[in-house]
Amino acid sequence: SAVRRLEMRGSRPAPEPQQVLRESSKTFLLDSSGPMSLRVGLERDVLRPGEHLRGAAEVTNSSGKQVRGVHFALQRTTHQTAGSSSTAGVLDVGSAVFPPPEASPGRPGLVPLDFDLPDDLYPTISGTRLVRVGYQVTVSLDVPWAIDLAVSLPLTVAEPEEAPAPPGGGQAG
Image 1 (cartoon, rainbow, N blue to C red):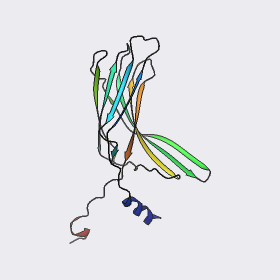
Image 2 (cartoon, rainbow, N blue to C red):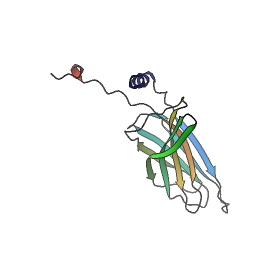
Image 3 (spheres, rainbow, N blue to C red):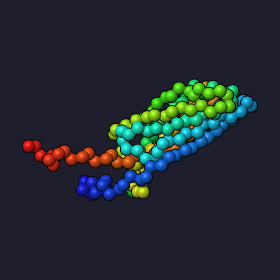
Image 4 (tube, rainbow, N blue to C red):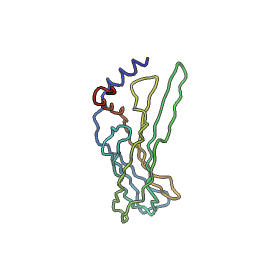
């Protein structure tokens, strides 16, 4: 089975990366001044372990609520099935907190999202019933005394690139 795993690793090219964008808005109970909206974009949706993730969160706050911070979380979801049994789990594999945007009421404020993926991430596995591994980026606004506004985006973690062979075929001189 070890040989088969090695063959599978080399035979699956990473999907073509593309930009991804999601948005959501919310009107708060007992606050008639207006909605709060969050728009999140990632530069690309396919990365390798250790690569740098770039994106931005655009916050438009027409409500009377304050935003204390912008929370970023990278989550891994796993599903395993064996016979009639299955397990599923979600694990936070990375997080960061960014300061709230500088913006006037009703005007969008931009928060750059810069994050290095951990070096030890498993690649995304899909298309099989036995094991599935997936990732998502969740960006949420910390709003005191309210349910936080959040946006989630899918992220594909590709297999690490093969290290180049040392000069001379790896043999000591």
